[in-house]
Length: 202
Image 1 (tube, helix red, strand yellow):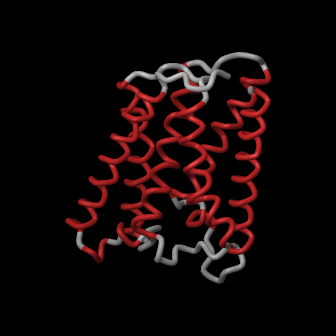
Image 2: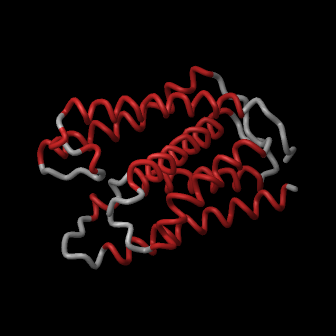
Image 3: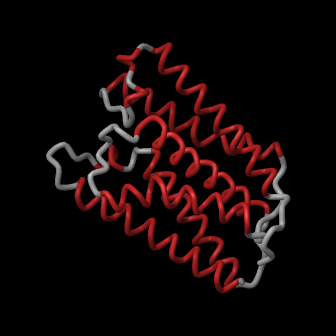
């Protein structure tokens, strides 16, 4: 079972690298391409984070150890973020052009990885039990990302997603932000709860 799990995670890491690189190769050819804008998307960042989390899990597995609390918190947080990416995209952005012109890359980043990451966390037992206070750590990165995006939107006009555009009105933007924050917190509760399960022993 350990070999199967590690193989799946290795494939997930390869898929993330291929999908991000594939999209970057196309986006970087656009006249309006800006390096910081491309890597400023929550989609790109959350996929990189889950890829790093799986890579770290592979290193721990190679040492024949169980993940400690720190790495488990990181992977749990990355699972929350990638799940948020999947839900937000498939509910708010599926019909919006957000520079996702490479279809296979788009599917991996917004559909395949969110589903796999959640299933990996739910099923496989090689993670520490998390505590509900860890949810505060889960909220830290999205809060920082949001502040940076709002500041950039107010200064240079760049926003990664239409629902964060101040032209909608700050009240509307605030409602979207609160809704997503609530979702992240609730997803954090689920991730912490799932960390207590041992469905498939690894």
